[in-house]
Image (tube, rainbow, N blue to C red):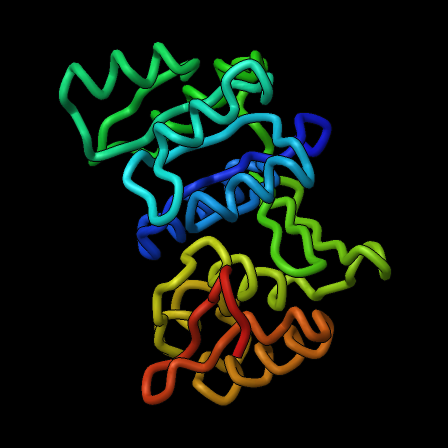
Length: 228
């Protein structure tokens, strides 16, 4: 998906922004985030995106001001994603050059489908690639690479543990859950064994391993947006 460029998400609501970024990355897109109108203008000028997902209610220049500023200047599809459902907002957005309009609440799968349609991507399912820091995980090929190092070697169980966590971002998972769902039956399936696997995973991932966070008193959580 890298050849398709970056999706610029312009959203000031932190939980919604995190969910969109996470969902797009899981779908294999490169994503950048701007949390207000000024940052959005700077980001688009610095590196024109392939497509913009734009909220209307923003601090600084709002979504309408951004549409007006980008009209005839930023020649990429803009999908308005907003809680405003009135006809006037829809018509004004389209009049200022928006390519699509999706009202909140929304299904992440529908947003991804609309992005793929606007970018004219093939209908075949995209490879599920999860990216953070300098790490890329191809969830279908079960491979992990780092930008400078290349392919990272994991044992099957280490990779199973990492994928189990990475496919459930933000969820605190107990050591017992991880052991029951991932560890092979011929291995000690206790908390200490899970800790050992996680320690080796973190070491192999280097600084990016900080995203496999300890959920104190519970177990572990994979944090796509920030490290420990």
